[in-house]
Image (tube, rainbow, N blue to C red; front, side):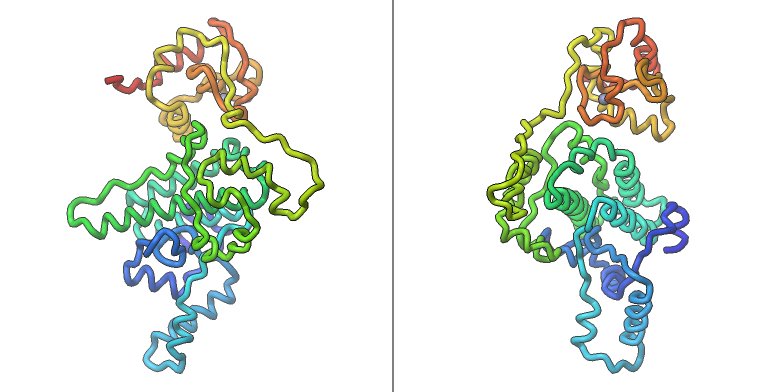
Length: 345
Ligand SMILES: [Zn+2]
């Protein structure tokens, strides 16, 4: 685990190897028993953190339990082997939990394993997508928490179903899920959120929310989440006072370019996602984009110029301005050279 931390540059992260985790690993119980049981399977809800004193304690107990002689009762053992799944307490904690999951996969399967590569890509993307995730920061704390819970549940389900497929099949390894797809879906304002049941919330010890009539618990779409912002009063208990919040219309984060330059039409029609292209630039597989004429420290926004629109929260939003054909030519050249067009048929 220490080597993994060093390799992944996560030395500051603590990681508890609890008896329950050892149990899952030793017995190959990688798949969740059900989507609502976050104490089962190998998934980000259970990745344990905490202080090392507790770890040492638990480990001592574990080895005592599994040694020749033990004075522990079966009940003690059962209690110790219970995993405590939890929801992240805030926005910074969630990425850490995902990172711990990557560490665990690294240790269990090795750095060259397809699962590690796929999951590590997610962790890397999560760090890069902060500006895109910005809209979630504006949500009510409960909705923000639920955002992370949903993201975790999504990864949990994807991991679990993959483990299940692998355990059922005797043939070649099933293709690993693309964990990073969620960022494209968020950007494209597609619905990506798995449902969050009361059972799951109870297991995560945040069931108290359910009794408050939190409207977004049942909803599974982004509009459900933002819609619930207007119902803050239900949660906080302020029934009549408070400033009314405007209900954001669905899709209002989208900004459309009115003066689309026809020279980009070939790229607009291509099904490649600009997000994917930007990712390959980050991986140094493609050269950097030309710089913005309005903000020379930043790149030009690929989506804005080639798609004719982008997101209001885009980190390159300064570049969302009109370009003349001549000014856009460097980007056009970049596309001609570096944009691999997908076959259209
Ligand atoms: Zn943009």
